[in-house]
Every structure is written in C-alpha cells, then in structure tokens.
Amino acid sequence: MGRCLRPLLRGTTYTRLLHLWVPLLLQSVWMFIDMSKPWVPALLLVPVGLIPGVRTGEGVQARLLLLPGEADPGFSVAPSANRRDRLRTVLWLEVRMVLGAAVGYSCVWLPITALVLVDLARGRVPDGIPVLDAVTPHWWYALLAPLPLLVLYGVVVGLGELVTVAARALLGPSAAERLAALEERTEQLLERNRIARELHDSIGHALTVAVVQAGAARAAGDAEFTGRALAAIEDTGRAALADLERVLGVLRESDRPVSARPTLAEADGLLESARASGAKVDAEVTGPLETVPGPVSREGYRILQEALTNVLRHAGDVPVRVRVGVAGGRLSLEVRNPLPARTPGPGRGSGLRGIRERAALLGGHAWTGPDAGDWQVRAELPLS
Image (cartoon, rainbow, N blue to C red; front, top):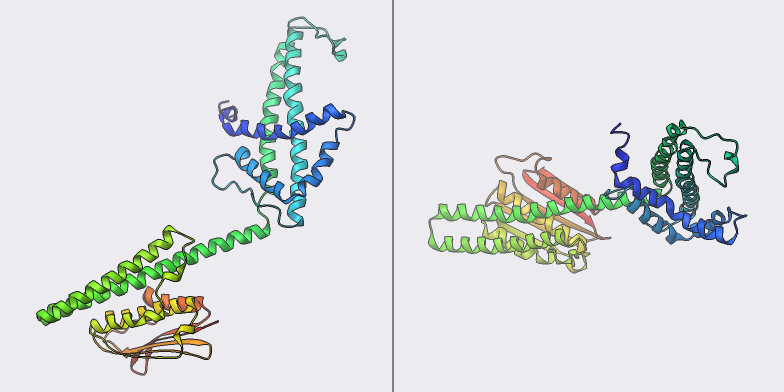
C-alpha cells in the first residue's frame, strides 16, 4: 500500500501536473470566445510550433517540471535546426494539449462525481443534474465515493509518466544534436590527453635534467661544476613551473588560447638545457622556422623535448644529433644518439607513444627505435 501511495510524496508528481495544466490556459481563454469550436486552439499551435525558438522554451519547461533536478533529463533546449525538428515540436504541442485537456477534465469532473456520490449516500439528490432524476439515494453510495478519487490519482500519475515519455521522444536531441554532443565529448577527451602529454613532456624533461645534473655534480666533487649544475637545475625548474602554469591555465580556463605554449622558435633554450646536462648536442636547423604554423610548431617543440628527455634519461651524456628542417611543405625533426646498453622497446613508455600521437593528430608520422646502431626519433609533420 505504501508503495502505491509513494507518488503522492514526490514533488515530481505535482510539477508534472502543473506542466499538464499550462495548455489549459489557452483553452480556457478560447472557451470565452467561441465554445462551439474547441479545436481551434489545437490548430493555432501548428504555426507556433514552427517557430525555432519555441522548441527551446518547451525544452526548458520539460527540464524544470517533468524531471526537475536531473543532471541530464534528455530534453533538448536548442532551437529547431531543421524541418524535422519543427514538425516534432508541432506534434509535441498537440500531444501536450490533448493530455492537458484529459487531466484538466479529470481534475474537474472526477472530484464532482465523488461529491455527488457522497450526497446520494446522505439521502439527497443534487439539483441540476437530469441524469440523477431517476436515482434513489442509498447509504451504499458511500462505498463508491472513493473510486473517482482513486481514478483521479491514477490519471494524474499515469498522464504524468506518459507526458514525460512523449517529451523524451519529441523533445529529445536530434541526430545532428547528438552528433554535435559526441564531437564535443571527443574534443574534451582529446584536450585531456593533450594536457596529460603536456605535463608528461614538460615536467618529465625538467625532472630528468635535474636528476642528471645533481648526479653529475655529486660525482664530480667540483665546487665550480656544482655551481653550474645548480644554476642549470634552477633554470630548468623555473621553465617547468612556467609550463605547469600554462597547462593548469588550460584547465582553469577552457577558452584560454594555446598561443602561450612554447614553439620551435624557443628550441635553443631546450638544446642548451640538454647541453648543460652533459649531452653533446650537434644541432642543425634549416629552412624558415617562422613560416611553421603555430599548432605544428608547438607540437614539434614537444616532440623535440620528449626526444631529448629520453636521451638524458636512458643514454646520459652521449653525442646527440638534432636536425630540424622546413622544406616541401613539411616539418622534419630527427634526434639520433648512440644506442644505450638497455634499449627501450619501440612501443614502451607513454613518452614515445605521445610522440606518435602528436604526429598523428596533425596528419603526420613519427618513427622511434633503433636505426643503424643509433636510437632514432624522427617525425614529419605537414605544414598545412
């Protein structure tokens, strides 16, 4: 019994009832104009439903009254974008009016029927109702009096559920809106992956440089060398903090431009950081780097940074050959160093995977692995 009466305690039952009553305002006004044509309000709703903004208003009402408090009720609040959406809105308005009329008449006549049964049980026949002229009052009509109220309860709850189902079908997102939501979700996932790569590359590079410098200073036992190592660690740490601030800025402000991220124009500082860590870097840059588009230049910087980080982490102070070239509508990057004693596999580590993902995201290719006795990281990125 308690389960059956539970809807009476839910606020949703009453907000849905209010939602069904709203169309009765138009019908009530029309009844004062012409009672002989009750179908006219339904006809007037056809041009109204064709207005794109009406779909937005109906979606907002459905969210507030049919499923209040739900994070994703499944109702679109975007204007009608095409003919199909407009026709669905028209159909929704007609369905809402029909269900509203049904609940409106039920809320009026079912309580009146209950009162009539109570009067008959008390021995009095209500005046002004011709159909009751032949009815004989009797006490057992009191047993029937609760039935209209139970029917009213079922009508209110049932039509509330029915209008919610209809709203989900007719006010739900269209195929275009679902595709747009899927694209937005994909963009969010790509942004999260990009942020993860940013943190891995920038912070990983800084920590690798700091560890190598500290280890070299401890092994050297030279005060002058230790001072240079500490200065390099300090500079690298400051650069890492600046990178971290940029990445966190993206998290805090989703619309913040990415133009503040480092590009290949700042690669000299990256090379000097590697040299300060003991690596013997032979760098050669050919072609106009200033013509490289921002996204390509920024991703190229991160690829170069991760490649140098891997050299310092796995090979130490070894000769490193860096080649950066712009020609034929492509940006080419190559980092080679002698193979270390322990060679990482071609698919290990999130850093190498991140290099390939960055290149693929721009429509390019990246190769990592042993080549002619060296460890090679090579990437080719299209400029267009």
